[in-house]
Image (cartoon, rainbow, N blue to C red; front, side):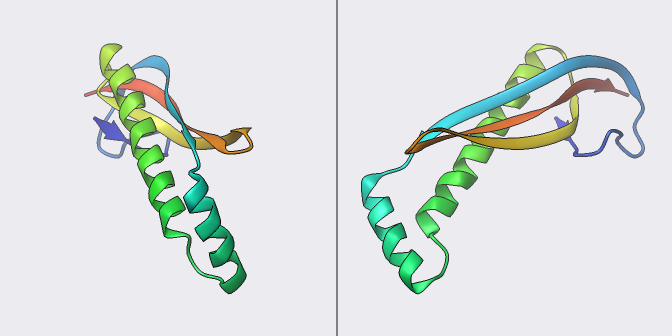
Length: 104
C-alpha cells in the first residue's frame, strides 16, 4: 500500500478515487507514567513513555486505515493526515485519514 501526504504519487497515475478512509485508536494514560511525567516536567526532557505511546498509537491508526482501504480495493492512499483529540482527562484519540485511490 502506497501512502503519501501529497495529492499525487510521482510516476503513478490515479485511475480511480475510491473515497475517504480512516483508522483510529484511543489510548489512556497510566497513573505511574503521569507521576514520572510530572517529575520530568520539573527537570525538563523527553517523556519517553508518552513518546512511545504516541508512536504506537500512530502506527495502529495507520494500520487500521490501510486495512479499510484494502477492503475497499485501493492500492494507495493520498493526502494522509493525522489528528488528535482529547476524549477525557486521561485519554486521547489518534486518527489517521486520507483518500483511498487506485493507481496504475
